Every structure is written in structure tokens, then in C-alpha cells.
Image (cartoon, rainbow, N blue to C red; front, side, top):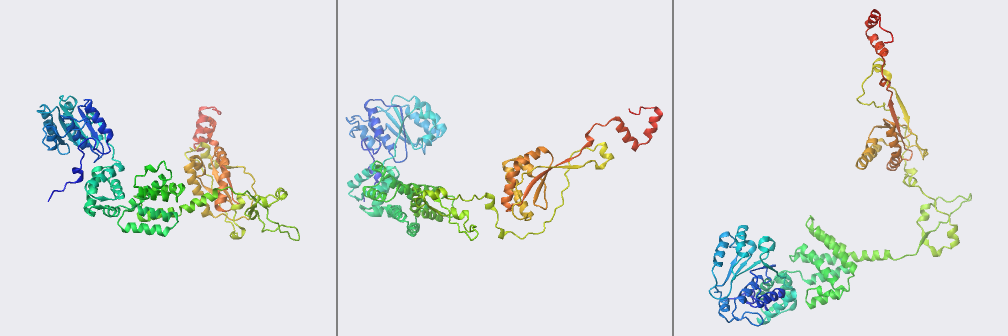
Length: 612
């Protein structure tokens, strides 16, 4: 039984021309060989499976070839090429840095570099996965890499260029390998299938290439897997089953349901996908890709961005004619938002279903918005016919609000009537916010609150006059003038509990907006029998601030409490402070002589001046 060799090894490129999708690299290397401008060190960077190590081996083989062809390829006939093909060349050394990343490994390599080649021109060292070397190994390699012998060439390969220290990068010629395009992979897989006498559908090869995600080695591995699964007939259906991929057909059916506003069909299709074992998040990402493909097909210039087979491309072009650009753009926005919040959602299935519900009604919303944006005929509020009684009074049913709710076309009303039409009565905001009289509670006897005593200032030192006369502090009240707004409606007592709640809400808002207003309003108040809220202030400066703030606070109280009879004012409470004047010597003597009569006797004995 012959041993099976995987396609990645069996059909590995042996010449520059057979390398797939890296023509910018191979042409540069061929020109360097033909012009003999070879660098001392090369660095090949790129993702996995794109041909870095393959190009390194082809370069090493071609450099040492003794009979290079006019196409700058190895001849495969000389001694160097035969030894390379049989893996017995003494001039080409390959090192895996993933397992040989210590300083000792690099020192052994440096020791080998000291010896010149026995046959051939160059000794070539290929170091794969060079980013795995330690910093000490890199530092030990620096001097040799910078000034190698004339016969030594180093070819480094890595998938993670950012992990290589800058001193190594500066000593190398850097070549960036591209991801293999889907068209190139499909063409390469088709050639292999033809050589192996395998029947492969183009749709299946496209699907394998998309699954490989730019890595040709992965595509060859998947191709071998599909050949093993389905024999020598690789079909699209078998590929979908084996690779467990969401078929294009699911998204075409879903889009048909969404365009037809068939929400049950969309939800049932989503349930079928979940029962088949697919992930809801991948399904969501697939919807976004499908809408993007439909949007790309809208313009013949961008249809080339669609990397699918011709059969699938025709289906996309057909369905893109049914979906509007507004639907696709809005759908992409909804799906993107759903995708962003998917991980944080507690019920992820419901999260996706809500997105499908919005998509199913998206066309209806777009049509409604389009109809609303169309120009309409100008509408004029026509006065309602006034029904007069015998006395000529108008009917109470013909209110201004009823007139405003009956728009008619301007073409159906003569211009004379429009000019003579009475203007609707203006309704004030306070009248609109007023509760109906029927809903007002029955008036109760107001409970008069005793007036709060005036607050005394803290930290005041008593004077001598205060000690003589304890009743020296007398409160005088200065009341701020307020405009006469009139007493609208019946006098309804204020609900004190409701007033307290509203007052605290005003304080919280003012505390966040303006701390000075909060400090002004954060004080005790009392309610007079005629629904007058009275604040007590300490000075006239606060009164000026209150006067500017009062209209807004009063308006808010009336609106929140639904009581138009509320009034708001403030009182300036000042304490008479006669003791602040300077006391004379006579005043001090009279005060002390009342407490100590012996002072009068001492004054007479010593003949002191009565006026001091």
C-alpha cells in the first residue's frame, strides 16, 4: 500500500513561478539573483500558510544552483539541486526557532558560520518562527547578523513581526507576504483536482477557499478532508454538511421573508438554524455579510468585490434588485447594534429574535416615513359654526380646541371667509393645567398655622443693655412687594404633604443646578390661611435674590400642586441690636453702681467727677 502524502506537501511549489499569489515577492527575489544584489539577511513576514518557508527554500536552492535557467529558476540537475531535493545538502541549514530558542542554540549556529562551504558558493541558514527566540538569543545573534562572512546568508521567517526586536529588523531586508486571494486558491485547487482526477464543483471550491481565510495550506488540508469524505466527487452540498457551514440558501430565504414582512417565517427559519447546531452569533454575523453583499451588487462597478462563484453571484444580483438601499443600510445598522450588544445580553436568543422582528417591519417603517415626507396641501384651521340661542350666546360646545382639531383644505374655503374668520381664543398655559371644577375636592375649613418665631442669629455676644433689658431684641418684618396676579377660582386648602414633596423635589433640582438658589430656598416656611407660602430671610440681599427667583418657583408650585390660588412671598426678619453702639464711661458706671452700691460711696469719698 502506497503511503498517502497530503496535498500541502505533494504539491508544494518547487520554483518561483509555481508560488501562488506572491508575485511581488518572487519577482523581487528573481531580480536580486539575476543582478547578484543579494542581501546578507532576509526577513519573510506574513500570516500562516502563505508560502514564507516555501519561498525561503526556493531562494536557498536557486542561489546555490550551478546552472540557473534564463527564467532565474533552479535547474534541478546539478549536484547542489540534487542534494537539496534529497534533503542531504551541507550548505543549506534549517533551524526551527520554536524549539531551539536558547542562547546555546544560537552560539552553535554562529560556530558553524565560521566554516566556509566545501561545495557551492553560499551557506544559507533558514530560521523559521524566529520571533520565538529569547532576547538573550537575539542579542547573541546580532553581531553575526550584522557582519556575516561573505558566503553566509540568513533567511528568517515569522508570523509575528512585532515580537522581533528593532535591532534585528534593521539588519534585514523585510518582505511582507499577502493573504492568498480566493480566486487564486480556487484556481490552484482546480488544477490539483484535475491532476488527481477529482470532480469538484466550483461552488464547493469557493466555499473551501473562503473557509481557509487566506491560507493556502489550510485550503489544501480542507480539500483533502472533503475528498476523503465524498470520494472523487466534491459537491457543494457535501462540503456544507462536512464543514458545518451556514449555507447561502439560509440567508437568501431569510431576506425573502424580511422583504415580504413575514415575521413567522423568519422566526421559524432562525429556530431551524439553531436546531441544526449553528451558533446564533455566527448567524447574526452572516446576516450582516449577506446585506453587505446585496449592497455591493447594487452597482456593476462594485460587484467585483463579491468573492463568490458565478452561480451565487447571479443569485445575489437577482435579490439585490428586490431590496432597496434604504432597507439594506437600515438593516445593517440594526444588525450591527445587535451584534455589539450580543455578548452582554442575558437572553441571547430573544436578543436576535428582537432584531429579526425589527427587520421584518423595516419596510413598513420606511414606507411610512416616505409617505410622511411627501409634500401635502396646506391646512388652515376653519372656525366651527357657532350655534346661537335665542339670546345670541354661543354654544359652549364650540371651544377653541374643537376648532383647532378640524383642519380643512385651503382650496375649499373662500378667501373672503378666511379673511373674516374669527381668530381662535388663546388659551393660557395656566388655564390648560388647571383641574376641572368638577374634579376639585370639597372645600374644608383651613387650619391656620401659628406663625413661626423669628430665627435668631448664632454666635451673637450679649451686650450690657441686653443684660439690663432682656426684651431688647424686637423683630421687625419687611415684606417683599409682589405683583397682583389675581385669585383665580375657589380657595382650596393646600395639601401640606404634597407641598412638602414638591418642595423637596425643587430643592434637589436646584442643588444640582445652582447652589445659591438651593441655599436661599432651603429654609423653613409656613402657610397662611389664604394659601400663602411665607419664607423667612435674614437680610435684604437675600430678598433681592428671592424676588428674581420667585416667578419660576411660584409657577412650578401651581403646576405641580394643581392649585392656582397659591401665593409665595418672603419676610426679612431683623433683630434690633441696640447694644452694638459704644458705651460711655457714665453708662458703665450707672450699670455697675446698680449692682454694687458701694461704688457711689467711693465716688463721694474720693471726690470723683460725676461726668468722668
